[in-house]
Length: 228
Image 1 (cartoon, one colour):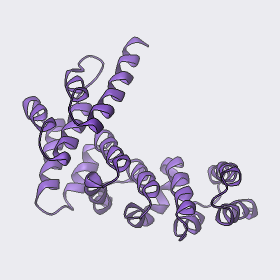
Image 2 (image 1 turned 180 degrees about the vertical axis):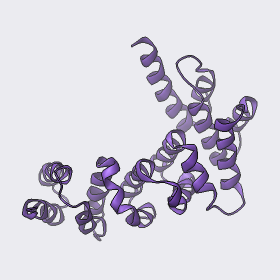
Image 3 (image 1 turned 120 degrees about the vertical axis):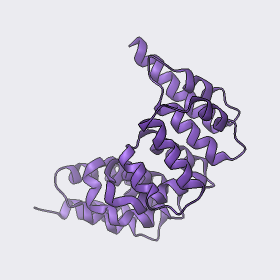
């Protein structure tokens, strides 16, 4: 296939990283090229750039590609530890969409980001914990050393596999440890639906502002779905 258009767009992004008027249209055009068959592996030229803006554009493109980003999973560990929060943010979305049982180490890496200093990353991890499959969570747990993260993941899996620990979820939502509160919010969100929003309502009233805002947003979505 002819690749000159895709190659030219990549070079445009690399050459003008700070010019949104150039990068925005170029990135959107490149996304179209990728959906049309331009090799996703070529995004490595953006992802490995020393320029944080260029790497961020590459990470956004990967996240927008959903399952088409699968060939780039070997790049994800470096992106999850990238100094730029935008890169880490979009890398989490790629893991959610593409990680399977053999990707336990990278899932474990996402779980560890639940204590990232950036609130946007913690929010994205909470979204990951809420939307990931039991198989993904179990794969991540198998690659974690015994301790807090592994215990919390195994507890979260039990909420899906067995009778939910409602009192335990409510207690953990008020725990002194922010990571414990985050996992409790994931459980509350996962177990809530249009017919029973009680746990999510409890999370939406939490003192933790991040959890309160996340739960409030999900609660609004459920209520809109119920009246739609």
